[in-house]
Structure formats: structure tokens, C-alpha cells
Length: 142
Image (cartoon, rainbow, N blue to C red; front, side, top):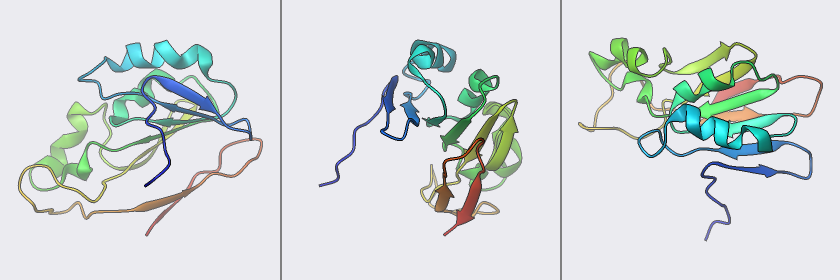
């Protein structure tokens, strides 16, 4: 059994001082509402976990913020590899700088619909977060 807790509009502040925040999918609660609900609880640097990448737009003026998202599958296959960013805040896959925040959108390993991928290979990503005066985001495909 894994020992973890799902964060739904919640913030946990670790012993290191890092805030870890999580919000539900926007179908359950609008992204801006979810972010505004927990923003006052966030202290210092934050690792923000969300299913949908467009949440990063609501954190763009918050320095020391790393947003980790999925949802897009990188487009998964044609024609979506070219269109997926249109409905996801402009984000498809990979690393983005969104104002003062950093965002990484993982293509993940799963699929939606047909069990195939074309031009959007699956990925597992190792992200190293180290203490320091600013985030240094280093993402490595596994």
C-alpha cells in the first residue's frame, strides 16, 4: 500500500518549507476558483500539482512556483498533436515559462480513446527540485 494523500484544493507545507498544493480537475471546479481558494495557504516556494496545464495562467505572477500537469498526452496522435494546445491554455507538452512560474506538462504513459500514439511518444519524467534562491528546473526523460 502506498502512503500518499490526494490534495484537493489543499496545501501541505513540508518540513523544508516547500508548499505542495493540489487542485481538482476543472470539470469539478473552475481552475481560477481552485487556485484562489488555496492561494492564501501557500507560503514561499510551491510545487503545484494539477491535471490541467491551464491552471499555470492563474499562477503566472507568483515566483518560486513549479506547476506539474498532464491531461494533454502531448496530443497523442494526428491531428490532435497539432491542435491540443488550442484548448489547454496554449500548452501541449514539455517545459514552459509562464510569467514568473515554471510549468512542465507531461505526455504521460496512458492514452485516451484509441490505444495508439503518433508523434507524441509516452514519457516518464524525473524532475529534480533542489533548495536554493530560485528554482532550477531539470527535467529528464526516463
